[in-house]
Length: 444
Image 1: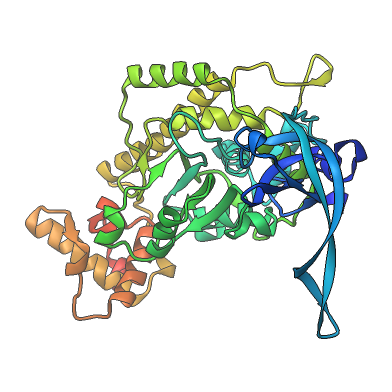
Image 2: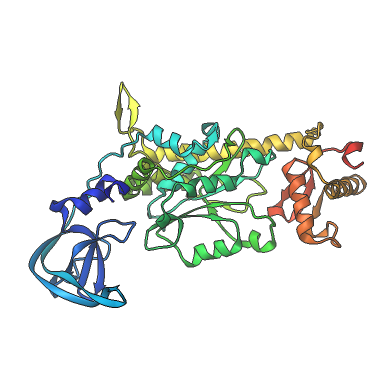
């Protein structure tokens, strides 16, 4: 079993010297057990009873070492197990707490260097580094701790761009992260860390109702954008764009070295609060309101660079190769986080600007992917183009397009036209804008 856990957890579970060290979990008013992992329900061998004078000094979830006093055996019938249809009593070791003190959370470096971790988690993608996709996925996996801004976690959203779907989509990015997580991190449990793919309003509302300490997600553009979607205020800290990266078509398998790195990072305590407060002050002073793209469903979080910085501080537990050997990174993660956030934003806005220039100068005249359009797609595009030429208005409400045809059929046609660059989804997909000029064969 020890191979499944990081070095800290292996020591807590199997090292006899740490048998009375762990995370407090109360099972009664004055009774607790010691969890040997923050992420799975593995307990030590004893149940501890606390005198009244010590109860207030031992908090739920705190990491402590207990000095046990008298130990006795008790029989637990209610918590026993069934053997051949009969309940078998279980013996419990009950220890009285003589004293308890905060324990030191000593974290050894993970086996993988930081660069190797980034490489392994992104091997399902070619040219992942070109889009900083390796860092995006890494930060989603190591999360961000709670801090002055509130609950922890990282929220990401991929910009929907004109490209062949076979090259990969933001949904494939989310699935790549999910494939590398153990079950506890992919479903709601007592684990403080949780990652999910957000592609429906049900998932959005579930995030709000069942908030994890560190809930991470990737927002995936739904098949059909409705007003209800646009009303949701979803804060995004990691906007990303897929331009050069290409999905290889296969998801990775669970890698225990990757898990060791992730768990070590998740145990890493955050920087001092005065450093975080100082950075928050710089961000507020800068006061820039950056907009990513009209098709985004999330809203850029003004404190995003702070959250990314705290996540990078965790990523920096992995060593880097410098001066002929592997050492801990020297770079200030708070400054690094600020630079990464603005680099991601600028990359997205650069792509948005490129698309606008193509539209302005009648770009995409070669009409790529024409052979993949269906007859209904061509009819819709022809009507939109004629309407724009006659009225001078190149945007129309989505709901006004061929209202006599089933909405699902229209949505699929619009998705194809958007995918191949003939239209843009504006205002969260509620309006449709013509992008490219037509030629006779487009509607023949």
